[in-house]
Length: 468
Length: 104
Image 1 (cartoon, chains in turn cyan, orange):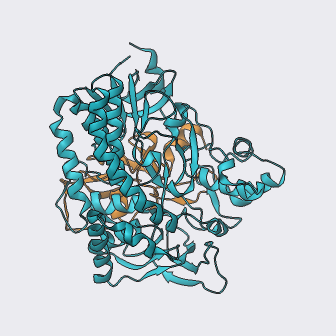
Image 2 (cartoon, chains in turn cyan, yellow):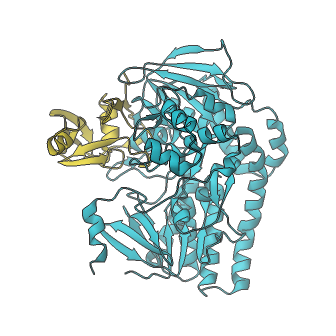
């Protein structure tokens, strides 16, 4: 058993920032991250020996990532990075089980920071399982860190500020982006303008990406999305449709476009598997992506000594994640006695202030692009909802017709959520289908219950747990 | 058919190598994931599903969806998006190893 003072799970913006601040307070921090190098999704580094040459896909956020990496490096040996490590369970008293180097080990820190991030919201649309349909995140990984275009003619659809970013990256790398479809009407967007005052970094980013769209003459259409994707062995075409204000598809507005790749980005779902395993209290926040752990102003969850930061506590982007990560790192260090309460308060204050300003702006932006109920109308009876177990919407409705009224029973009856991804892909859509049937809100439907291993682990690796 | 392509600008690639995909030689570069190398080679189908034999490819790209599972050097169901290529690596997109082992 390894017993570090403090452990951080996830080495994205929030995890890096938490580790930096805890190290600055004099602690040795162990960081566990699944990827080959730190950075998370937004600051993902190419795999060695491949190197980024600051090419056309690099945006203004990459310099912020570099500065954070330099801070992490400056922390030296006080930050112990465990890359390629999967935390596959949490047991009593913050005891983590980590799969690293083909073995499992128990790790029991005195303070724990969960910075597990978020993933692209899966939205079941006919044809979305075809090769050539990528999430916005997958598209960025391919273009930015692998230098591979997903296709020659690409449609980008979904919602939120990431869409023009991805489209610009694709265009600069040489793909033809046929259009960007924003599902929201963005009516009332002017309300965000006064709140933008002072957010020069965000304004700069937005300007950079809008200029990219204009330069590449990419049409940006609002109140429109993908109705279905056509192809037998891979994507051949896409049918788009206009949406009303509730995002319900409108009759006689369909249009077919030949494409060989589709990029879908409908916002993010926070990864709460580990905070659920820690028995933290969660709340439903649709504007932040769904179920999130309840946190204090110091980013502590309802379990003492367990902190959470970044997109795992509600999708808010890298700038919010870094501020929350710093606050969590400082608070955890104070909890362990490495900082006095007044030192900690003084270190936290500027980050808390910056966070309050960013959140004020995000309230408007999140409300504009919050997922509307009508989107579920795109899921036709023969649409696959659970990609792992190939369960269709019709299969699920049949079980609902028989009177199934909760997620656990729905899972047992259909196998939806029992596959390799363990419900990460179908969970939000299952909850939406169930909510429609029960007539209650999504907040009345708790997420699928989580059990270790939270990611598939080979049995021989699991079996090493009690050695040594 | 989806047409992936390598971009010249913005990336310094590692050494050019060859991997074996379903018995055929495929070009790849060190530092690429198996998924990226196959997409760049115009092979977006990474597996077929157990029940309906539907084609599947890279979807989430960050190791969450488990839809890009391929056989690699005799090990079944490995995430192509999380696995770097290596010289001479043998990739199986047809689930042959699973068929041999379980007689399906």
